[in-house]
Image 1 (cartoon, rainbow, N blue to C red):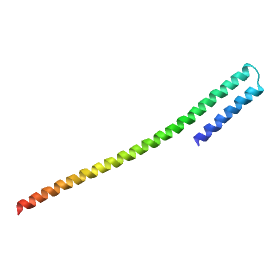
Image 2 (tube, helix red, strand yellow):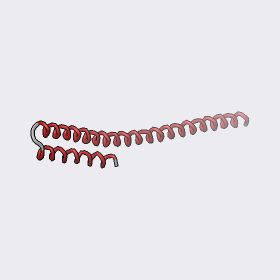
Image 3 (tube, helix red, strand yellow):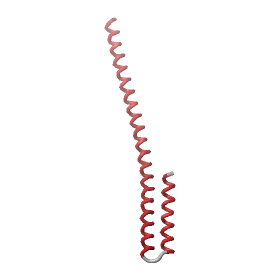
Image 4 (spheres, rainbow, N blue to C red):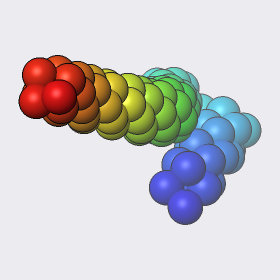
Length: 98
């Protein structure tokens, strides 16, 4: 939605620049074309920054999911190791009692 608004504003600034160049004369036309071009550049860069930020946020979410999965698997390994230790001790105790 934000991107659509910036595209519309950029197109409007281009329309203003072309109208200023066609219908105005002298320094006023130059000022209108400059202002519209400046606004077009701002809107275009804002659109690019928004797209890049969306990609960065998606990548961060993927990294978080991977880190959660790896920490979950490492905790499973720790639980299994502790169970193995308990079973080994129980086996040693059972063999000593016989």
